[in-house]
Amino acid sequence: MILVKNKYNIRYHYYKNIFSRETSKVNPQLRSNDFTLNLVRLGRLNNKLFEKHFSTSTLSSVRVLNKKRRKFSFNWPKSWVSIEERVFSKQCILSKLATKHCLNSIIVQNYQNFLVSSLDFRLVAVKSVQRNKGSKTARVNQVVPFSNEQRIDLVKMLKKLENYRSKPVRQVNLLKCFGKTKPLRISTIFDIAVQSLFKLITEPVTEVNADMNSYGFRKNRNAHQALAKLKNILVSKPGSENIVILNLDIKGFFNNICYKWIMNNYPISNKYKYILQSWLSSGVMLNKNNYEPTENGVLQSGIISPIISNFVLDGLEDCTNNSIQAVTSWKSRTKKFRGSKTEDVIIKRFNVQFIRYADEFVIMCRSLSIGKEYIKPAIINFLKERGIWLSEKKSSIFRLKHKKLDFLGYSFVLFSSWKFKGVFYGKTGKFNIAVIPQKSKFKAICKKIRDKFHFNLHYDAYTLIAIVNPIILRWCNYFKYGQSISYRKKLEHYLYKLCWKWARRKHRRWGLKAIAENYFLRKTKVQFKDRVWAFRGQNRSGLRYKDNLSAGKSIFLINPVGEIGSLSMFSVRLENKLKHIHGYHHKVRKVEKFLADQKIQNKTQYA
Image 1 (cartoon, helix red, strand yellow):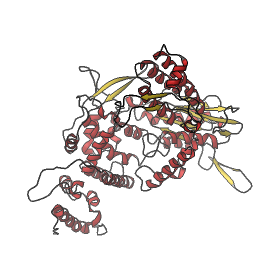
Image 2 (cartoon, helix red, strand yellow):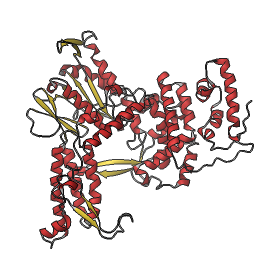
Image 3 (cartoon, one colour):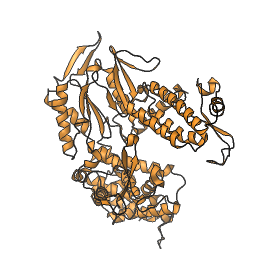
Image 4 (cartoon, one colour):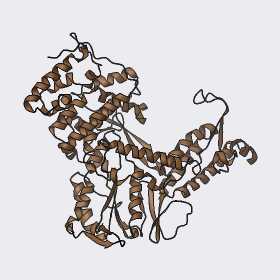
């Protein structure tokens, strides 16, 4: 037995010595340095004994192990860098185990059980609840934000999940554009903390078998990369106006996923299967007395629901690629032709391209018969196993020259003659492909801004601009790629009309000159980037918002055209070499460096 003077590590080194003796009998090649991971592999110790002596709290000397054991106590940490690094390193180990063994193997489940009781994982889970935008809203039990003491109590509660049952979800209907409503479901703070804890443990396992061209709710992936991939396919292929596009839509995806399939396949430990079942069957509280049980589907507002939805649709890309194997063999599926005098180019005759963002996906092939007879039936059978099906009204199969393609808020339109000048575009033979915002999205942002101007007549200009500016900035940051400059010019003209209308309604006795002198300020072209007008608001009191805003502080309405530059879709494209690297891969630093350099290059282009 090895004794160390430091009182925190006596039991740690005692069990380390035991491990070295036991493992030398079984496999002498196992190193004693990796004994925490190898203990999980061998299963020599009991789970309770393992969780008791090898949690991260022991290694970080938070729990005091002495002759007389003291109570578990700690302070809320101020620096999170070292904690998050330890959590990420253990997530990478978990993904390695999942790739080496099966997703639901005993080795992976034992390591998941070890990580659930880890103090670092519980701290990061509670912190993620604090980061959430809806953390300050009242829950079903009317509990609003918590202090540091309540966060510490929540970390201690996450240690004891033996009798956990999730509470029903409170449903609130939110108004959308054009009179539509969207149900928002709010869980309790403790339920969200439990979900974020199991998200940290299950996400590295689900990323192992994720589709290469899946861009929704994944680390280092976003919607703009999916759009750039789609634009690259349409531009690079000769004769892309004849490409057949399968724009398929799933009917009620989140509400119709089969419970049995999730319980049998989702990679969570068998010890905590009852927690997954309690999430799926928690039910919805419409009012104080109205309760609706849930029989199928996943709650769309949960933290872990995007990961479950991605896991349900993982394998759809392989299904589409394997569906055309019945047409021809691999040798006859390729065709050689001479692209130049020096080299031969090999092209797949029935090339199938697949792009997916969450439950929205687009498939491209060469002929209508292959899409209707082989690809679509294979997708229907794939979805039928999971209890979901396609919507016949919203699904369509067409060519790009006959109909525009709507995907993730953008429209891909084929023009025979190009009417816009000085913007990026892609040429495919005689035709040009334009990437523009959808008309419905443009009408929605106009209605949202119009309501802010119409119903906030009692506010001054300073407060009104502070409300409207984040809405304009959010929309323009998403729709700043492709040929969106024409729509942003329309938005600028629409804002000019709204500002004049609001000022004339607020000051009915003022003349046009008085309104122009007070609200519309002309400045030099250097400050406003060739902008002729600028709607201004001035803070006269100095008590509004924060004290650092002194009296007389001016604020200007954002210009959708001048202050946010246009970028090409190719500026956010992810390279083909990096597609196989997921968020917990051992080469993930290459992807992060590539994305950081890409962001710096895009900033310097329009600085």
